[in-house]
Image 1 (cartoon, rainbow, N blue to C red):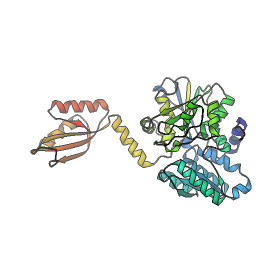
Image 2 (image 1 turned 90 degrees about the vertical axis):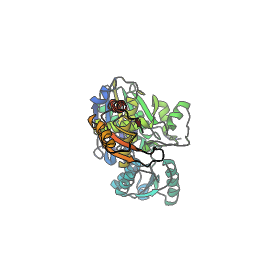
Image 3 (image 1 turned 180 degrees about the horizontal axis):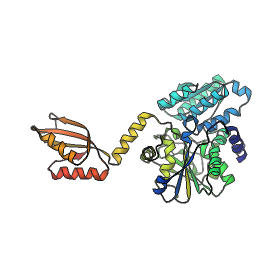
Image 4 (image 1 turned 45 degrees about the vertical axis):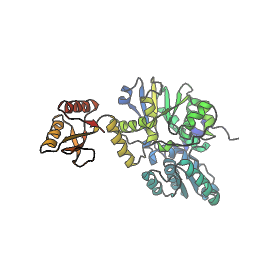
Length: 403
């Protein structure tokens, strides 16, 4: 039976990491505090080396290996952030690393992992597939396996976030952390509950990857068939058998949020806090803003990583603009005669909407002869502005619909 993780383990990791990794900021957000009934602080581990908290556990694990284990090199499975952490920590130690990543891992994370010196193997649809492949490679290569979460030294390294928060914020009420396999929250909870048992620890999972949430509710380890979420860093089907008992013992509650809330929070952090954050990094704040966490006292949301694919950012921005009513597509039919399109666009221009593009077609099969189909994409101020545009166009006789 594995030895129980202790505060001493986390403190030892804290000493080992000191001077090597960044002590990341704990930022009080007036914006998000104003949106809730509490003082919201953000622990910005998206600003950590390699762009996420994962380097904490990876570095602690690799530095704790024996000389023989280091000589064999290390291997890991990861959706991206643990990959970069292991690769970077291995390069600091001067040893070889092999990382198995899902085939759909964000390109930015694959490139960064290779950039830190690792050999990258792409396999499977998600973390769990990559993990199985990594185990097979490890059996052949005899490299030392560095698990993404189900390892005491990794958990201890992640738990150093909790010690930093307690040192930097007097009177903290609650700490909110993302949960995948449970490495971060188990290390965090072990440290915080030992030093400040009155502090509440909340975990957050994506609705599409809620294995730890289901396990805690059932008081037994549960596996999900799928783990589908834009928060790829916490898309885990099977929680750790080492992390789960710690979560059961120390974590006060685990909640879930949907991908819409995660995407909206990514956009909010980008626009209001000027922070580039990935899905797993945004999920803690998403839970706080959605009222899933008690909004009282001093609440710390852990922003665990910022390694988001730029293509995903573009899609999230576009979706967020549509959801907030700041981008809209309208369609109507016009008389197919000179000046009809010009007059329609002029009405929109007077209402101060920015026309992004226009599609005009007189030969659509569903459009009667003598009329033309028009679709416009508009940039507007908000939902109310969009409603004003629709109302005015309809008053002018246009049969307009939103797409």
